Image (cartoon, rainbow, N blue to C red; front, side, top):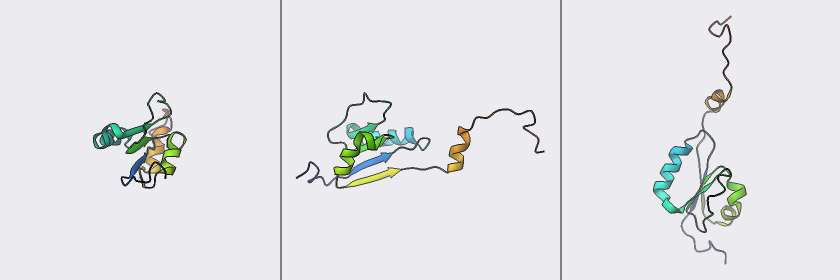
Length: 104
């Protein structure tokens, strides 16, 4: 018998893709799950690992919590995506060119 065999409640796993409502959704998840929200960001290794999270939220889910996710019988995945073009355009550096306002 594994540790989740009697678990009727799902484990929600939120895969955070950068620039897709991470801050807002983290606040919503905190209001729903409270102290049972496990954050998974490799740049914050000081966050302690929970024994029985109701929701795991972050970027680094596989490396940090792959064992928990793979063993749980009722995982519900959550993610948001954004239009690829509107995501990529702000990442390109903008340099002013002498003729930036001219078409030809």
